[in-house]
Figure 1: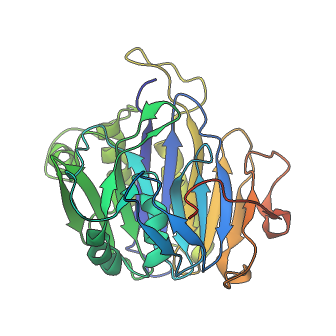
Figure 2 (figure 1 turned 180 degrees about the vertical axis):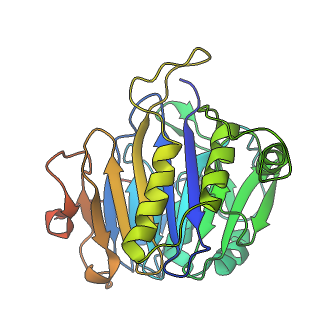
Length: 320
């Protein structure tokens, strides 16, 4: 199996709403499920001996892959986190800190922190370790955003965390590393170079295209136009089902999420249905002791607000 490809785009330079979109592109579907997770859940880092344990401080809405970990989500304070593939990742060597698997990295952030700055400080207390999922190594990097427009990218490279923190770090793709992506971006028109905007599906060209069109989004009239803006950018860097490529296996986009951090609404579209669904976090019960709820977003009958389609479920990963 080849490496997955994904893109994340954060529109934090409009006066209406802080909104972020991400795609997941893979050789096969990651069979996503959506989860509504209340405060007070006893969690586990799923990293073997020495794993961290904790009690979730904040409720969240998240998306899991293969019911094995959290790749995407937003918590009730408006902090979002997204794990994307990075083949260049090289994790920290063993030490005395408790461990969290990289497929629980996102959920650890959502459970603990209200802002990007809090998350960057708090993550130093644990060591992130790579785990295999679905019989594949899963090296990842992490994107963070909050309702103030702050954002960060965290990469584990050569045994140490490399952090890019600031509002300007609003696009992320896959390999090469973020520093190399920025260097490549400077070759293109509008960013210091002469080359035209590229149209390929490889990570470096998706990064350029997302960065370019993000600069040219018109100011939205309301929060729905803001969300529609990042969804449009997500579709611009998506790969249709069945699209051929001569260099490696075809990697279609399986789903696209968009999150309004200002108004705390999570949107999701599986690409094999034309319908967009959403959950407004302010209308969900995150109180300690509330039921854990889940939903299969691949159900083609779903459309619009799906709060009433959620059902109680047993969380199959990261439970202490």
